[in-house]
Length: 322
Ligand SMILES: [Zn+2]
Image 1 (cartoon, rainbow, N blue to C red):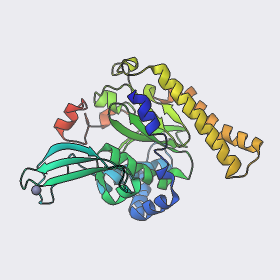
Image 2: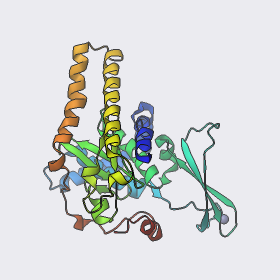
Image 3: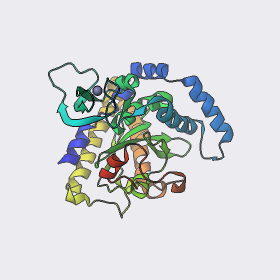
């Protein structure tokens, strides 16, 4: 059951991004002066009254991250200088070895020119990625989320990792001004275009699942159009997915309640009220407003057709060329 498995695998994906030391390092790594200078410019030019200061910070972070900070790679360059390498498969990172960069697999290539072996380790530790600064969508979103957390997270449950079952990831943040969760694709520097994948890339999808620190949410209805919906029952029992998410969210509420009681020494009543205000109300608000707020706010005509990151052969093979 691959969908259920990947839900369980990503439950604590944001834990590393909430680490205060990592956040401090992130703030020291990026060019804050340049970012805020550009935000000031955006503020002066901004004609959308619905966007507040931190929405503009997010927009600038998308630009900065894609154009000044992170690099897309289809395959690694050879140390000899050649960029012509042939894939020779991949191997799992040995589980009995120390793995500070949280490498999942190591892709192996051979240089066409000098024939040496070139490795591309897929790094999952966001802190390591601040130094490596390259990868594909997994690395992009992982590193971007740490910077997003550092700039607007405020230690709250305001950022979300989003996983598509057909091999793409992106993220969301909660906008206080727009009063909803906003789609962000760091690889494409796209802000608030949830139908980017179905309408622009022409991508067919079965499931889209969001992972917050305190909950899991099925976002398939937000991102998948009727035309591009792969029948969910063709890959998994949808009732089992719904049940799994309900069970996990129950567990997450329990953990949150325990943290109020144990870590913050709150009374039972105080903890229940905080749980209601911080977790239950926001989630119900999102579920209730699903149909109204899940519409894209801007026209797709502003965005180039098809996926921009990745070579044309690569996007075509994935059915994402628009
Ligand atoms: Zn070489």
